[in-house]
Amino acid sequence: MIVKLFPRLRRAAVDQLLDKLEPTARGSAFALAYSLPDAVYYAPTGGAKVPHSQLTGLRTAILEIAKKNGYPRSPDRAQASEFDAEASIQLVELTGANNGEFLRDDVWACIATVLLPDIVTWRFSLGARERYHGGIRNAFQRLWLRGVVLDRGEGHQERWGLLQSLTEDALVQITERPSIASSKELSLALAEGWVQASCKYGVRKMEELMRKVTLQVRLHNEIRHLASMSTEDLEGFINQLFEDAAYRSGLAPA
Image (spheres, one colour):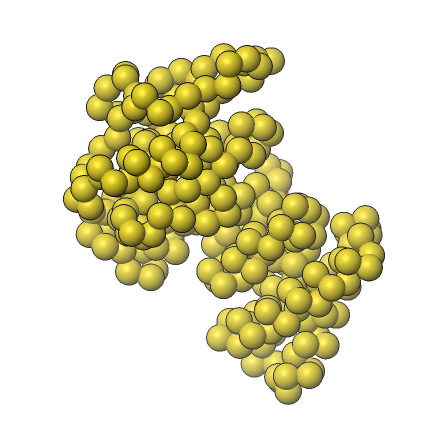
């Protein structure tokens, strides 16, 4: 199978393009023309350039989700959360989870800065430059990662349920901690544990509880490779961490 190579953008070029971008600008280089900024580049070998139609299709899909959630008006918290969940699903379904191109920060920098800069500005702001640069704070890289690690699988009746159930704080605790996000098994177990605990203690009490459990998971993972545990044992271990944290915090079932 031929690997599809996606356009890339170096960090310095991101800042140069953002300096020229107007906060009210709409559209992208991909949508408006076949020519791209000179700073955009592709890997010289290893595959074939992704078709222009696939890039514009990606933009169209994300733009439609944004419009459903208030774009171009600033989104409220509920709209922002709904956009993130829907965009996570769409990004995984349109790009897949196995293309190594999406492990590259410069690919996501290009997607955010050249393909969808108006959506990043709408969701955050032009001043939030970490949302354009590649990395776990990138507006779309973080959503793609969420979709990849919290996907319950194609055969699951509630395949994307975790994306829709977890709060933003819980999602950040899982996907912005490399020691956790690097393991799909551990990410899923922690997310499933959060859902069970939230049903027992109430969502409003989960932020502090999740932070305590996440810390314990990271500490235990330094001593023992938690992802090597069986699914049943790992789920039981995570659930016990939530129980212990709730007990120490004096929380009673809701």
